[in-house]
Image (cartoon, rainbow over all chains, first blue to last red):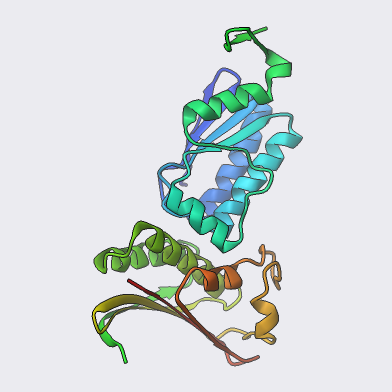
Length: 133
Length: 135
């Protein structure tokens, strides 16, 4: 069965979607991520969609669900790398991804995630770096 | 009247066919050199309507056409099913309305993403939706 790989890096789970997903694949990813947050006690999920050429309402809903489920399980989440044409289309479609955190690239996404979980795990030093407590 | 340059028919009977429809629409959009934003819009609209075709229409046919009208080219896609049809088209087009488990963005959203949108349907008579995006 097709699966999108989920990488574990410290307290974070990383996903890069690089294929044109059929609906079942999107649902499988949603389930896999939710299970993995629980099994690894992850504090944050980063989803890179820079290779995605479209986000329709189904994939948009999946992104929203992942973000809600992560929150319920005590983890932060961020979607990074959305192409400008995809963003324009999403808004015209009527999907605003309410509740989904987004960032331009992986680096900014990781910063956002670290800030989300700052209180739990990280301490922001005066020079702007994060130090694990 | 636009001239039909090319036409192909795709069957939509399972989820994976939605991906095939997206890819076919992308191919034609590239061929007529739509801008990236317009490509993305028409592919997204086609994805929504192909899913509707499967979920609400019980599957059906997608006819993809490459058109020429004067100096401009366009991509036109028909979504044809013999499903239950739509009782109230005005309501079905409203954002947030869904008769299934969806988000209710498919029809109204798809309409906003294309230049021309035509919906012909009646209860028990199936549904035919046609979208066109011009270069």
